[in-house]
Image (tube, rainbow, N blue to C red; front, top):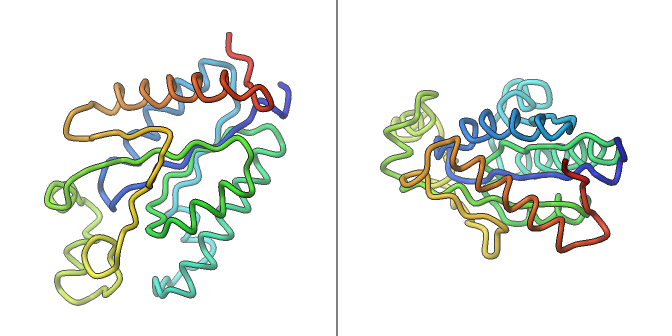
Length: 185
């Protein structure tokens, strides 16, 4: 595979908005196109980088810079990356876009109330009980993408349909940009 074919997709949205579910549906669709794919899921990476996370601003700044750097290195070596990470500040995603020329931002949109209902990890519950004071969408702001390449309304689309929409955007984005055109079969 030509290294210039690799690209990154950042799935961003509130905690429990559906990012992981979409990533799980998207990965095999990309692999069917003969792409090597790695999902950088924030909770899994965080367990290595910050095993006892405080979610402070300084820690988040460091974590997202490191996550973007890891993704950029993978893309540089021909691996397509799916970032499955809230990245509640636009600056985090903009930093990644600056490192990775072939980059697609996907806004995974979900009302806060529904995200709270879906929250099997207990993130919002910890925020409501005072165990956490930095939950994006609750105590900390979540800065939605202004001009994402794709918007997914998880109240309207299944994970499979959302993954298809992302895949279509990938094909459309890279067909228009001749400097980073993956060769899809």
